[in-house]
Amino acid sequence: MSIKIVSTGKYLPENMVSNESLEKDSNLECGYIFKRTGIKNRFYTNDETVDILAIKSVENMLKKNKSIDIHDIDLIVSASTSYDSLMPSISFKIQKHFKIENCICLDIMAGCSGYINALSVAQKYILSGSVKKALVIGVECLSKNKYKDIKSKMLFGDGAGCTLIEYSKISKIYFEKIESYEDENGILTCTDNHVFNMNGKEIYKFAVTKTVENIDKILKESNINKSEICYIIPHQSNIKILNKIYQKTNMRVFSNIENYANTFCASIPIALNDMLENKVIKDKDKIILLGYGGGLNLGSILMEV
Amino acid sequence: MSIKIVSTGKYLPENMVSNESLEKDSNLECGYIFKRTGIKNRFYTNDETVDILAIKSVENMLKKNKSIDIHDIDLIVSASTSYDSLMPSISFKIQKHFKIENCICLDIMAGCSGYINALSVAQKYILSGSVKKALVIGVECLSKNKYKDIKSKMLFGDGAGCTLIEYSKISKIYFEKIESYEDENGILTCTDNHVFNMNGKEIYKFAVTKTVENIDKILKESNINKSEICYIIPHQSNIKILNKIYQKTNMRVFSNIENYANTFCASIPIALNDMLENKVIKDKDKIILLGYGGGLNLGSILMEV
Image (cartoon, rainbow over all chains, first blue to last red; front, side):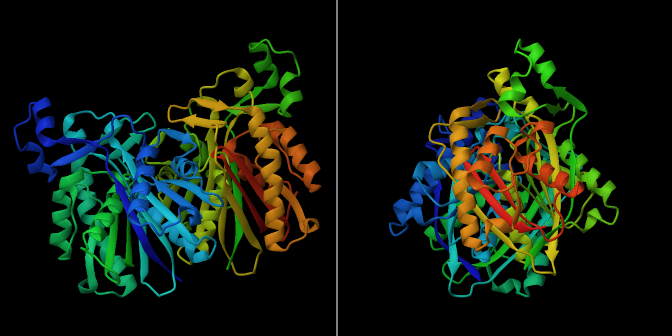
């Protein structure tokens, strides 16, 4: 039994923050941020909470795709690291907003690549036959975190992406390889009161080695040749990491980090939305979604659009 | 494909807090708490964090069952409403502590009955063939929450319960009915900085109606007669709620709330552990695990021990 992507949505808050304004505020030389990260802009919320960002991404999906009846959804799985309410969590607030009945709600915490876990969980529910249509969300409000300095803060943005999936009558390829690693020295952490800590050098090392090994594994296990893969769609963390993954795999690696910065759980569903909207990928294309980050967590999903 | 329970564990912190001490501190008449809640004792952590409680429940399971090799576990799913770290979450800390390799970690937030969702997710992964052994945890540190008064605080305790499940070669019954309801007026909420709010009357109404309807549904969908069910094992919230469920269903309802108070996500796995240890239930018995609470969430799992 396979799944297919029915539709996608995204939402970015209105407050666009350029490198120039951050560099000016922090006495950094002009061009400092782009040179180190590949980021040009990011979006910060003013008063929108994390659940509102998620809801607006779903509203945008519904505006784009009028044939969707939101009340047909029987599973909502949200992933985030920016929870401002431990109960109810984001998925329940989405259910409440859209008044969806007969629906299972749950939220996932699995670090920056929680969207991969959320999509994996939703796929399992569809596979089991217990749900038919699942809404998978990745959402973050990273501008509210407490960072030790601007050099950390400049990397991050707020946003939300959603993906509606359902059972596919036509057989579609689906493989996954999710792995968790010991974060021995706490190289990427965030407390319940949103104090954020990152060891950039150590995360870089993790992100350019384990990801590539993970892709080798999923290609081997699925017996699919890398030439068949249209795009790797990685978590958008830093252009240097994405370039290194491209160099090491020699596979096409999608990036839109310059527009949104690193939005953790939201980065992959936003990328998926942009690629489908701009017809960068189309029906039957094989793609690899690649998550990595805090946990330490790592995971790829090889699927057919 | 079915699942079976391999083993269980629990951990309660050392600091046992009696009604007498709470009643004395708050100028409440002697017997006030027991009369209203059925609770005699609860346990509070001193300096143990929520992940430590979870780890200790697993250690207790391993002490009891020497044949378990913790490194065989390939999925850890934890449920809680007491996260003190948004990244890494509890399951990753368990993986790190026991140095488990080749393992998927994820944490679930789905209110007080998150353990039901965690068990459901683990069952789906085993069903899909992608994991063989899953560790499912329910854990809470509710003593750290900020309550508006002692009449709320007295209801809650800290603790952890774990359940190890695996694929069962022998066919075993498994049905589930998980439902989410709109918490229209915020009757059970907890913020990221652990400010807790509850409307006891409204929660009582929800807990004695929707649970009973849910049990009717799962019995009907599974085509299993209530006389075949050995025990309902409900979330341990308040003896008045459990008595009402017993009255309405005329089915045996397990309770150990007097020993531990309400431990949210930990209450069902602790109950399951106590019942198996004391041989209240045994191999092949049919049971219904019943969760309800914040979200609003509701869910039952009808399974064979």
